[in-house]
Image (cartoon, rainbow, N blue to C red; front, top):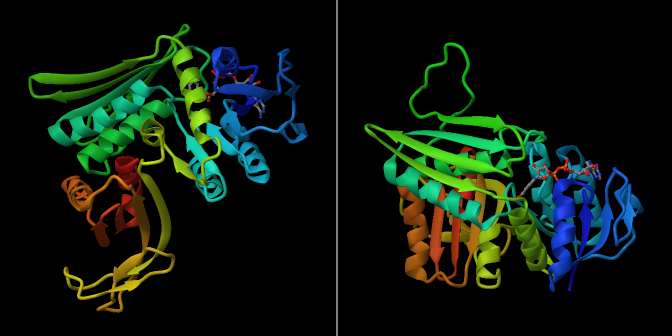
Length: 351
Ligand SMILES: NC(=O)c1ccc[n+]([C@@H]2O[C@H](COP(=O)([O-])OP(=O)(O)OC[C@H]3O[C@@H](n4cnc5c(N)ncnc54)[C@H](O)[C@@H]3O)[C@@H](O)[C@H]2O)c1
């Protein structure tokens, strides 16, 4: 039985997760934390640092400004960390990436399986249609939602951008004299009532429109996803996990790790020889020129990849317009080095 520490237990999502856990045979709420007083059939603390109840996974559905405390607590206790809270800054994401070197971390702007599928479909649609189609995203949520646009809309925008293979700028809402520029991705937030979440991604072309829609009919879908992910994360080794790991069971799934380093680029497109780089497994071109530069190094480990499938990963990335400083595909593993500005595109494609 996976024991969760539920931070934000008095909130809409927290209450839904606690309720669903009662019917779950896999997950139980060991304790809750909330700054709002709350009566529950598990111990509730107003301050995370006061909680000494043993648990396997810290599940956070609070506000972005408290994320550091959750990461710190989970690292100190050696617990897995599931962050459902949205509206995080780049610095906070970076902090969670660092935490994933010590503990298993899962950051999801949306925990429904349908949205995970929609992100894939958006990437494929954008890649298929090309950036001659105008992509516009609308998201609709209840009138209490704090952040705009939703984290899910941004995830879908990243998927579209990755499919286009461009650095398409995001334009949030339009007002006044605001013509649409080619290649931009429009993102628009609607707020009202009790809507759990509707996301629509439109691709407008000449005389045709393709629209992908996801509608969450209740928060139950996110709460069920949170329980499934919590159960998956418990006991996993440190790392950065995504919904595809959960779907594949993680054991045979793909893990993608990254680090920043310096790669010396060969002048020749064909490496004459390789040498070991830093940590185990990294190989790079033997330098043929002295020109050095920084790069993001990405390693994909997937036992299911045979040599052809590993090479296909590189071909797929090339088709997306991504160029490598270094690439190597072999059975079970792909190694790449990309320019830092390509990092997000590559990671959103791989995860
Ligand atoms: N990932 C997903 O699938 C998903 C789905 C729905 C909502 N969300 C996100 O989850 C978050 C919570 O949503 P909600 O609708 O439950 O909000 P909510 O306002 O109903 O609940 C938030 C709760 O967190 C508590 N809280 C705030 N700061 C805290 C702190 N520092 N320590 C302890 N408790 C604190 C509040 O008292 C409140 O009870 C939002 O960021 C929302 O966007 C994510």
